[in-house]
Image 1 (cartoon, helix red, strand yellow):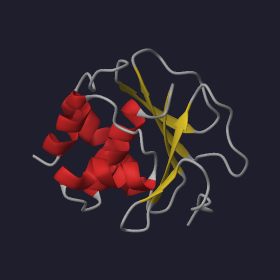
Image 2 (cartoon, rainbow, N blue to C red; image 1 turned 60 degrees about the vertical axis):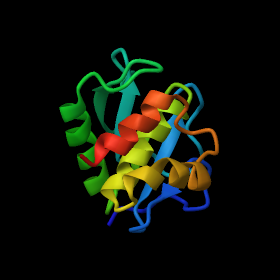
Image 3 (cartoon, rainbow, N blue to C red; image 1 turned 90 degrees about the vertical axis):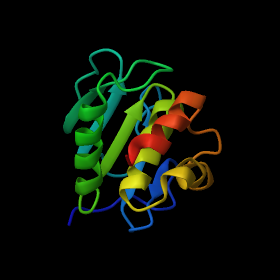
Length: 143
């Protein structure tokens, strides 16, 4: 198993299964500690190159993913890989899209869809998942 994230580190969400996933604002520098081994970039345009494996999930600012099917596949892979790798979800600000994606991972991890946003706000960032349509997306993610 790959060295895990610091569970008390800023921006790290511990899912009920014990998986750790870091949410990060790309406009901020990497925090101290090991870099991710896998990242999902939640951006409307091509992400910057990084020295670790990364996937781009096209997700314009203040919107929803361009493809729900692709979002399910990419987030499902991130959840699977978080069992043994350092997984990061990254976006510009690290709250709206990142919080929404983290809430979707919480649903995959067994948190009821109607409680996933609250879970992420309690354990990651109290301002995560900014828009009403992002909250609805999480509630419907389990369908």
